Image 1 (cartoon, rainbow, N blue to C red):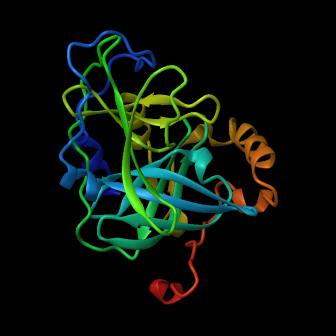
Image 2: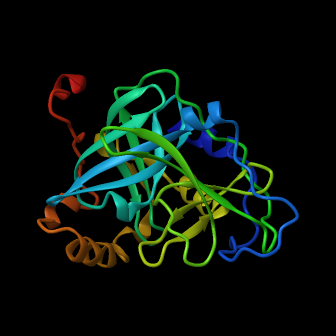
Length: 250
């Protein structure tokens, strides 16, 4: 937990305003960090929810503890989590969820060196500033990093970090309908609320009951075979496993 709080402090100053979803007439296009940094700081997430496989992206917020930030709706009720990174394929364990903010925290298993924390965060995003969402996508046969301008009608990968024109993280793509951006100030504040809990899960997101019904309804509508017990709240969450990886938890 001390490491998580140190990571929160490293994430920089908060975003002072809600990130605009409309693209104005910026002086220069938005940029992202170097390809090498993105390769190690972005994770492709494959969640099996009910009978479906749901793909999203994640942002490394603590490389030492293997903590990945993503959108809660994209892993709600996940029975297995497959994490594709720049250093290999891992499996994941859900250790915290804040459904009202639509953010969730995943822990990689096993912990391996080589991931990179995206720590350069934005101060205040100017209204109309060009913003770019950058995500990692894996469909089993290929693994690639994609980018998309943030704007009205844009199809954005849930969990992707959003960068401003100086290559700083300004938020993450979340909100189940329609896709929108959670400002980094909100993300940083929510992470600072977390406290250690049982079974190595984090507690402190007190709103998790209030919006759970909306995410459950979303999962029921989108994913045949979704079971309510797969998305229990405030219960010890076992590590999700992939075939052949059970020995990683021993």
